[in-house]
Length: 545
Image (cartoon, rainbow, N blue to C red; front, side, top):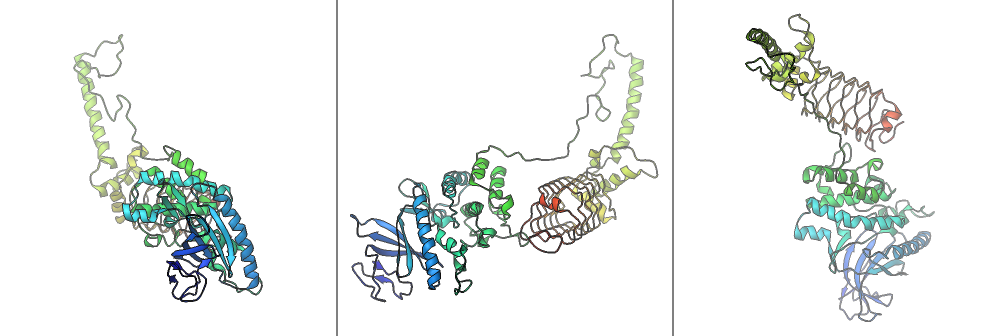
């Protein structure tokens, strides 16, 4: 079959031996050399075809890409022609890589521009998922290890692919190698040029973006950088593991981040690597392919973890006394050879003292919140330990003994308790809890989950909230002076009118957070993650002042 490349042809299919199109009369032999046999796809910038080169022995197969300028203004065409030739030279240079199709020819015909490239027999990884199933973690790692050097190569040639996606990565039949195709760079170079006088604004905007869902925000704003390809590759990995198009995966409306984690099963290390590839904010994404390769090569990523440390009582400590044998000796303790074993009278005296000590310990244990089975009682006793019982001064209790569980906090709050200062509520799951006005001054709240909770007008001064999950949490009018919010997840949180001066915001994720009216310095915010969805203190999105 011969295929007509005239964009306006109503019936492009023709007999194999036809010279002119039977529908529109256009010549079927492109440049008197290439006979198009089928269409591979149509897009806003043009079309792609399979053709045979009838001028060479054996009539080898090739791929023809046709660029169709959307405006026939002479100045626009002159600009497009210049950039087309420049891009053809670039593609000719990068085509020296064995996993990139070679450029065979380029030319202009009837005000359309053509690139002729090597034909690669194979199937796309998009088709591979459909045919053989989803990729597991090990296969994703192998995929990245193979494709990343190809992207490194094109970046070294100062070329940004701009359209990395499953349909543009082939598995070559010949050797099973991955091949990167369809650079589409011409459309972007044209779009970045100044529009000539007399050409309508917007006539070239259709060339400005890659594929929706795979292109990151800066590329959609026509400012692609090398890290844009890294984001697109990350989205490609998500598709390979889920079989879901980006449009079928939920996005956080506040931050613009793809909520992909719940759809995949990955180890902690690989989740971190992919998460950084998919950072919406360019500032926190991998800046180069080499950084991704180093992260993959690393056997482990050092991640700070915190958990309540239960101190081990020293040998013979009052909280865990060692038994006394019949000779009055505590096993395991070194004995002084100059002091003989105690006699029966001393043993009896020690036993009486031991019974008194045990009684005191029992009374203390009854007051210990970590030994109370009833959650509500536990919270009350935790408060009593600080204020004293019945007016009697409180017995000093180590901070570890003030550890509460989630039910204990909720039960105490329902009874009217609002102050949980200096308590240890680290790592608790209090998602969506209703705790407005809570006081957590100097409390240990590290790695606590308060996602979607209401903590409006709360007091968090000097609290340790490092690594805390405060995503979509209401924290308006909160007081965070000297609080530690390092690496806390505050995406989409409402911090309006909060006081954050002197708080540690190093690594805190404020993407999509509402910071309107917040008392905070620019230096503090420079240490945190923000993006175009963040509402800054002046009420504007995406900018500080």
